[in-house]
Image (tube, rainbow, N blue to C red; front, side, top):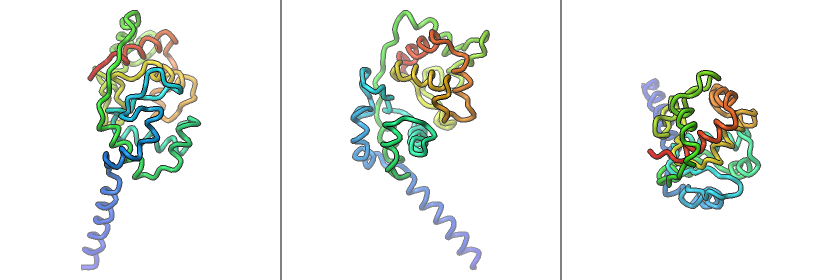
Length: 205
């Protein structure tokens, strides 16, 4: 009987923990008001924003949560985001992630002169330099893979994508699992980064 009670109590704790960890989009909307200054009220950040801020609308909630945790722990360096994430609780992060994930991302346009090279890198990589195809992890339409926590890229600002790739290439950003993105970016040229970033900007789910 005691063993049954202990098992039931443990199960209840885990169940309650799961409930607490679940994000509430309605709560997240209020908590995300400060985020809107850079990322836009609905997660569609302006293309000419300073600093360059990612579009968060439609991004996988799990991915947003991870980035917030990494910013809070300084595993991902950004003076603004490290400060913004510092006071957030796990529940705050889950709620904010749920809100932005529930929004619809607005698409973008790719520069016509960059599409050919960008499409080649995104869909086939560069065998000569050992660059893997982006779509292997991020999908043919850039929708990402929420189970593997690979982010959605479709419609993301080209300037933001290019900066992220260059940060991975230089080691300024190191919070990618198993250094996957650092490994890919290390072999990308500036021209390839510019082209694939433009191609991603024009993708739609």
